Amino acid sequence: MSAPEERPAFAPPGERPEFVPPDERRRAAPTHPMISPHSKREEPGSHPVEGGEAGGAAAPPTQPSPSPRPVQPPPPSGPPAWDGPPPVGALPLKPSLVDRVRKISDRLSIRWRLTLTYAVLFFMAGALLLFVMYMMVAWAIDSAWPGLNLSSFSPDDALEIERQWTWHQHLAVSEARQALLTRSLLALLGVGILAIVIGYVVADRALKPVQKMTATARKLSSSTLAHERIDLKGPDDELKELADTFDAMLTRLDVAFDTQRRFVANASHELRTPLTINRTVLEIALGDPEASEDLKALGRTLLEVNARNERLIEGLLLLARSERALSVRKPVDVKDVAETALEQLAPRAEEAGVTVATEIGSAETVGDPVLLERCVSNLVENAIKYNVPESGRIWVRAGMVEGVLIVQVANTGPHVPAYEVSSLFEPFRRLNADRIDSAKGSGLGLSIVRAVVRAHGGDVTAVPRDGGGLVVTVRLQPR
Image (cartoon, rainbow, N blue to C red):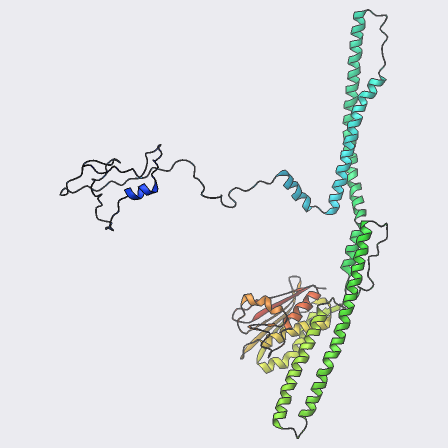
């Protein structure tokens, strides 16, 4: 009995394999136990397949069967088929002409847009006028062309003369049109160039109120907000309405700034007075010779808490002041500011066992000397507080570097993760202690530094130092 016929695994090239349902394939597929890769594999009840044909007589069990020849799949042919959408960027979309024109127009300023709009409108009006004149030339020549009296001529001569006369009429119309078109195009080109120049001037005059608003907005500060207005004169058009709206907004801002200034002044007085009274009472109580040791220890603790509250209030008021526009602008040498700050903090650095290395050069800027001195003091004080317990070091650099005024403070200290650096400039933020550990400060030092630097039109950056610590760099505008 011959073995059951098997279906070929692959169809010959050029032929499609016959479809076999999955259930039938599962029933027809033989199951084999796990065998060694070096052993010979035999189909039960059939001899090995030769030449890609199945079937045949069963081989005797005692006769060894030759090793089966592996069946190779046919080589792939035809274009590949995507299983899904093509990958992004495989077929870049070519921008259309409208997209290119829109992209170019987005790069133009509003002045040049108005200029080109005026020029295009003029060219369109000139082209329309030229077309009308081109058509009216023929009508005018035809209307003014004189007629002929051919009654004295024979019919053949009259027909020939009329034909010649009509031909001259059409020739005159054609030559007149050609001359008109040539000279009109040259005139249109010359006047078009003049229209671009005139359009630019007209656009500039139309944008004068907007330029005035921009100049006024640039000159505004907290000190000039009370009396600086646009006060645009002219007809009640859209630009006048915009200027009046801007003036009304400036009035509301002036009221808000004035309210903030009065609040800061009142808060400064109302918050400092009780703390000063508390400090005085505690110092008197500590000076009493009959006070017990427990009472003196409590008094000293309350004095430390009171001093910390005073520093916190001072820092908050300074932060509120530095976040406003500068009210004092005078020439300041950063060398004097840095040396004054280092001189004030020298005893504290010596007490903490921190060595300070300086490289300070002369460089002038314009700003508030008190705020700039406080900025440098906060940087140095922060470097002293967050330093290593023993043999700490601080490097202070100031001066001009590549045309930019630089103040840089670096220190040894604990490792600062790079992702934590930006958060250190937020109020009440400390490394690894958010609003909890307040023994070393209130967490306003770097916040005040950033506010002061921004008020002076500069920027401040910080990066972790190799080996631990922080490198803070302040960049200011030179004078």
